[in-house]
Image 1: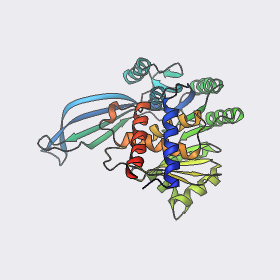
Image 2: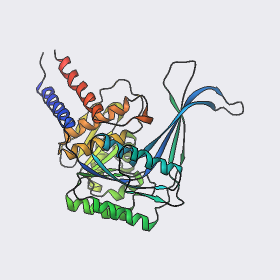
Image 3: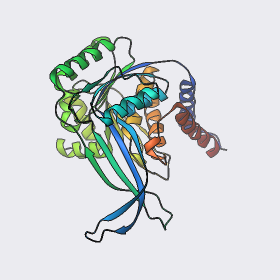
Image 4: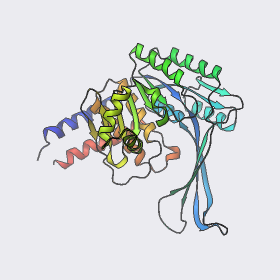
Length: 353
């Protein structure tokens, strides 16, 4: 039995994506947002505390990794793109570690400001398993050390001035807003206005309380839970209706919804809805899902790919994250995506033999 016309078309699109991923064309991506540190503590939780019904974690290892906008920047680098990252860290050990880690990987840190007496945000996750049992680690606890105060005005103005100047010659702008003070109303307005003037597509991972800043943005990223919350806020009966209302309200071009095992869906102002189903059976974790999707979309835009190709690439990137065994050291790369898309092509071919 041969492929249907639809399957043959999907096969060709996926094969074309592999070709783009293998090309060496460089692209400059400007990225602004919150920079933070992720810490992972692994261990065994075999017993409960004698004074309270809480597990006792016996630590076996720990890792530190860059997070948020910094994680997107290293993903862009790993995908063969040049990231121009703008953000701030504190003058503390975590801030210095972030800068050193990025520089060691060849990611430019010229746009990262060091703010005196500011605390660098650190998100720590404790992951535990039972020593006597064979099973996956589970998240036991997360605690945050964070700074959500506004960045000092002088530093913020200098940051956005640099970013606006740097938009020349870029293929896309990514905004990563975790509500830590870097993304501001005034700064966003200036940056988006310049991007529009240059015809530069904007990808935004917004804080739900900061959607007012995203007026006219081209690509908005939501996890399924975020769209569900917005569905209730706007009084919609379905996620699709909510996306349509939000697109109209904020004049967005596309809403990208990442739904884990349900795949990726792109709702658009001027295009039909596109859905890319997830092909995984065993989902291991979801940390870094939006970061990976933002990188994939930036790559797609740098190659002028259509919405269907963008959905397929974003879905493949999400599958790489969902299937990763250890998030603390995982960075999305071209090789990961080529392998993942190659598996999808092979599955299409085998299923029709």
